[in-house]
Length: 244
Image (tube, helix red, strand yellow):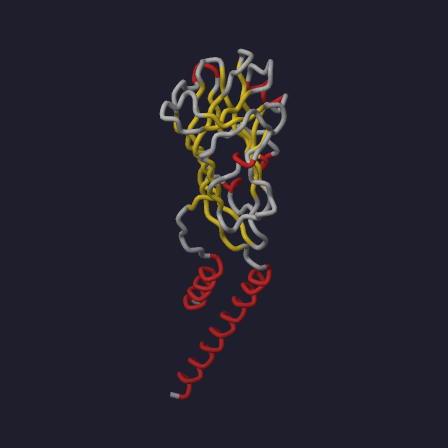
């Protein structure tokens, strides 16, 4: 019986064990090119690094998700002339709840190629604003934008670059085989040019094969075969013992 259990355990390991894979960059936006005015989306809002196993038919450019406007400049907070993303909230949107209600946001989307799934690990980015009356909220389409993944609101939002790393290891962000959108809601209680600034937006994870349905049917058959082989071995062993 111990032999049967060991054989079944080995078979389960073969079927279910996956090798440890180091996280890779799924998408990255570093905004290397200064834009030309305020837009809803543009070619210079495209990612500058894309995992080769993402669907190229999906528009992966950062785009306005509703009432915000986008630009890439090299003013504040960067002092070295490096471009970054300016997200200008909709006029009159001065709170996180207002930004969510009015879709004052920008977003990016992606989808793995057929037969593949993505296990996300983190979403990292740098963020800043020039005054204490601005903030942002991050949500995703995986729960229909109902839950907040991270936020910096009001006085807690930094006036200089602050690096943010959002943990995406929970089960919700594993084995993703369909389209996903991440959305950054932005707001400012003052009107006019009241941007929240972002740079180096990087999505990390691994791309893995989706198991074929036939593989799962092999497991019960394999277990039956292992048990039958073990039973035949026991009968042979008893027969040899009886004749000796």
